[in-house]
Image 1 (cartoon, rainbow, N blue to C red):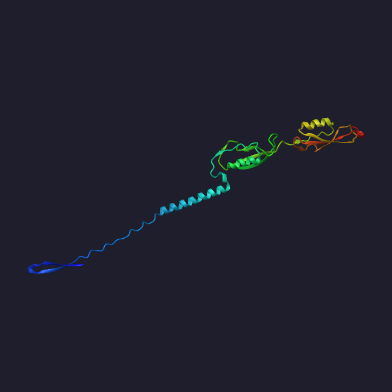
Image 2 (tube, helix red, strand yellow; image 1 turned 120 degrees about the vertical axis):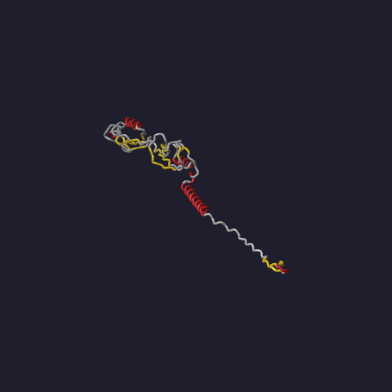
Length: 210
């Protein structure tokens, strides 16, 4: 916008002066968003990777051994003399793994019960530790004694001393005196469980006399 203004000049003259009164236009600029911090993006991405790896580990560990993922260390319980199934259940409930290492004869602990464990009872170990068990095979087999040629009464005493029992006694006519052992069933040298019976074949004497 222009403004006219009269000014007095010399010698009675006046001058007209034009003044440009146009105000400069105000310019406004909107603030620009700061560029994203690349280190912040990197840290966020690495955090997501770590979280994914942790979740994968927890899921895989739970799949392999469900009871032991969140368990803490604790003592191995005593499972000696327990039946194998009961011992296995008790150990697995606490997050342990069970390995049966065969049988061992034992005259006291019933067959199929635990006679040995490793680690020993009350040993503090991490979860998912393997506990080795050995089961009882029952009493050791007893060797059938050789009583052929002995009298029946003497043979019976030897059989009972060996931990066996006299079972069926058959008699046959023979040229020997009566009640002499002719054969043993099962044959001498074979193993039998303690308390098993042994059968004898004895002589009835000449002509079947007794």
